[in-house]
Image (cartoon, rainbow, N blue to C red; front, side, top):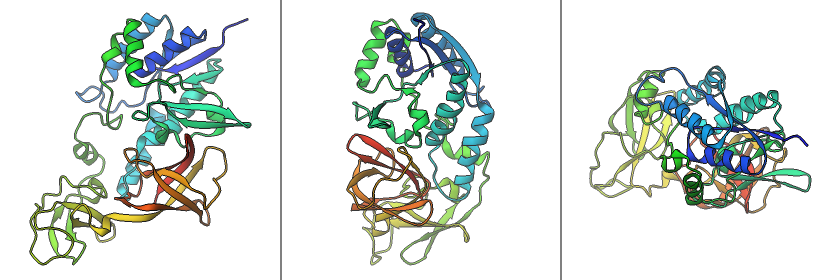
Length: 365
């Protein structure tokens, strides 16, 4: 009986390396695929793609698998980066990792793997997939501190039916231990952080190369008083504290916080190019119990039933919060939280769960 072929996305990190190793041990014919998604400035100090490719080749040599390098930079620029810039220009704060997963890793990559004759693809994501009552479900990972189901909520039935997540039931410390025991030199490699094409570089400096500064007023939301000047609304996000350069002092007698409390971004007026700020983390303008989400994507292919208790994450680093969902006309829904949520941010994804099952979600509008 011939071996079944699986193509594993190798990034050069320990997670995808161990995913490939485990599948090889399970008897799959494993092909590694290294995706090059960005090439605008990958010769500078911030892009690690060259070192990552060297690491991938070393990983493949130790495991004993073949590797193919494929360039998806054109698809990435068209499907992910263009949308990223358009969202920032509109004053929203997008999550490009969500787009990258749905458009590149589980679309362009999946299509390429099928052309190679693979039955399945796999990645080093911390998430799970199972078939239940004729449907494929996306599950949270066993390691709750590393769970990445939030970034995968746009996957559909066809994509999940062809995907394996070998790290679903492993904790990060176990993954590193497996890598070390197998002699993989990336066992202790630091996890990559931040947006893939920005790397460790200053975000504002990167964005200003594509969206030039557009100075405007910073005003206090409570009374409209001008407090300073911003360089461009796209450089700021709701709830932002650092980088406002307006200090912490305020006049006595003003409502909304103590004299020395920090300032936070609370709103944007795109037409007038005004950035609104408030003082104090607990200012009422930063707390909301309801959000509207658009660009809805449901893993089951249909929305969950309304007025039922779910949990939701309005951003990746947020804890899950009890909520219910209300259908609206068209491609939108309202999500009502049991408790007010801090700094709900247009452009970020809100992702719904029912226990361990990720149901899908949408983009906060």
